[in-house]
Amino acid sequence: MKKLILIRHGKSAWDFNVSDKDRPLQKGGINDAHLIANQLLNQNMTIDAIFSSPANRALHTAIIFLRELNFLFSAFKIADELYDFSGDGVIPFVKKLDNNLNTVVLFGHNHAFTHIANIWGSKTIANVPTAGLVELNFNTKDWASIEKGSTKQYIFPKELR
Image 1 (cartoon, helix red, strand yellow):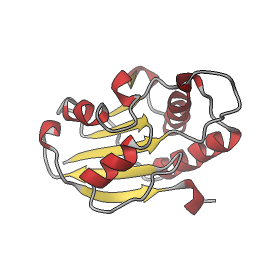
Image 2 (spheres, one colour; image 1 turned 180 degrees about the vertical axis):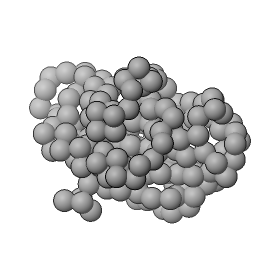
Image 3 (spheres, one colour; image 1 turned 30 degrees about the horizontal axis):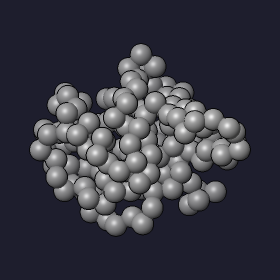
Image 4 (tube, helix red, strand yellow; image 1 turned 90 degrees about the vertical axis):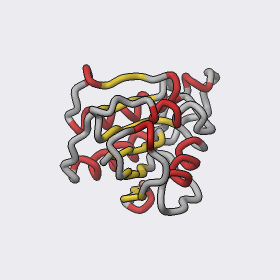
C-alpha cells in the first residue's frame, strides 16, 4: 500500500516585486498551514518522506509542517520537479520514488495537485485550495505502477475555520 499526501502551499502574497519562486506566504497562509498541519498531526500517521517545491511559499509551508509534525529536517528534501503547475513534473517524480517509502508528503502547486488528485483519486475535486491537503491511497507496492487509487481524505482550511 502506497500513500501520497499532496499539500498545496499556503496563500501567498502578491504585493512584493519578486520572482514567482520568491513569493512569500501571507499571514493567512501561515495560519492555514498551521491549521492543516495540526489536523495531520492528530492522525498519528507515520510519514516516510517529505519533499517540497523550491518555491519560497511551498518551502515555508513545508517548514511549518515539519515543525508541527516533529519530522526530522535532515529527512526533508527539495525537489525541482515539484515546481510544476501541470503535473508533468510531479507525476514522473512520484513514479520514481523509492519503493521503501510507503507514505510520502509533497508540497507544491496548482493546477498540478488538483489534476493529480483527479486523475489518481476516486473523487472529483474542483480545486485544491491553498494549504489544502489530499490523501491518495494506492493498492500497490511499487510507485512506478500507480494508476488509479482512492481518495482517502481531503482537508481544506475553510472547513476548519
